[in-house]
Image 1 (spheres, each protein chain N blue to C red):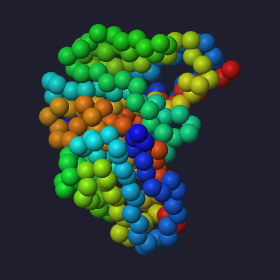
Image 2 (image 1 turned 90 degrees about the horizontal axis):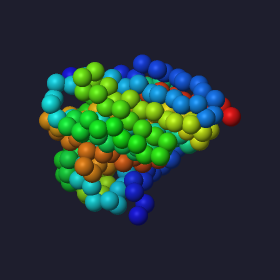
Image 3 (image 1 turned 90 degrees about the vertical axis):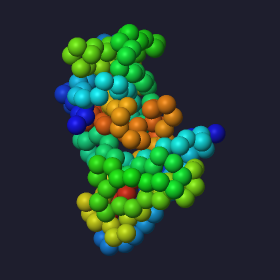
Length: 116
Length: 110
């Protein structure tokens, strides 16, 4: 069965520090998709990135970057030069191509607190 | 283009009461989902639908029913609410494996 583990439950940093969120997944499928979502204090879930299992290129979007390593089943997320607005809970999620309905399995989330 | 909307935003029920949560999407997505989020936990899938007229069970379906009579709407029903169903409920719709979420409904069962 698929599983997503986010071992860090909470990370506290001072503004402008970099922060890396770990995500480790388990799946038997050879084709799968990995996601990161952000949940700010207001409560909504914001889609950040989708990555398929055949694309191991790292991706950068502004201050956000993602490192996908199939060899270690990890899909880590780094926020560079953190800002107070980055304070949120971040969820990693996995979808297997063979699973009906594009169902997502979520990790437990990592709460990031950026202090000014 | 409102995306995914949920009605109501907040609700308080007494044990044994029933209610229906409405999810609507205007993105013409085929797939829709209902999740619950409990403190300290990620989201858990309750039910989902891969198209109009279809529904399927997710990870935690007990105590809930769903219907997808129209492509744009996905209803979640609680027939006899229990305190264990106190949670935040999120609806989502999907395009190209990515799911887009509604703002959530905070339900308290006393």
